[in-house]
Length: 176
Image 1 (spheres, rainbow, N blue to C red):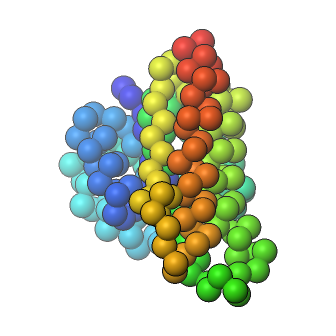
Image 2 (image 1 turned 30 degrees about the vertical axis):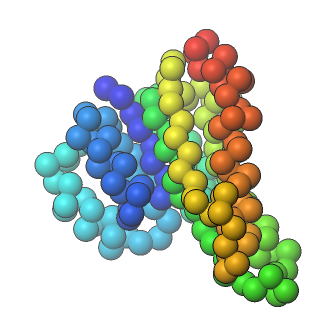
């Protein structure tokens, strides 16, 4: 069986991808932060896939969430075949009012945590051979938007992540 981890997967694009992976026969780890009611709704909606998915509560806007992900994967005793990095946050603070905390929060959630999650999965040997990583970015990575400059910049950096890791990961993932 293939195992997939989809971050930010209780709504929108993340949920749609997770459902497609279930349809394809994958065991799917859904990631959520706080909304237990939403996880109950999804569990009921996906009842036909019972035993083929689980939810991991992990706030990926901070580094501590990485440990929750790693613990859940280890407890399942599996290797990740598909990692879908979909989680992200935005901040619509006006340019002249952005303070370092705004900047750090968005960059941490949208760039730093995904990077260190990939690193941790690699270091802990939790990727399967020939695993795939899908990074869900945004048009705002390449089309500037005046309302959420931090988000656009963070998604630009996030969009560069796969290319910058490709050589290392292609070597690493074929050796595990």
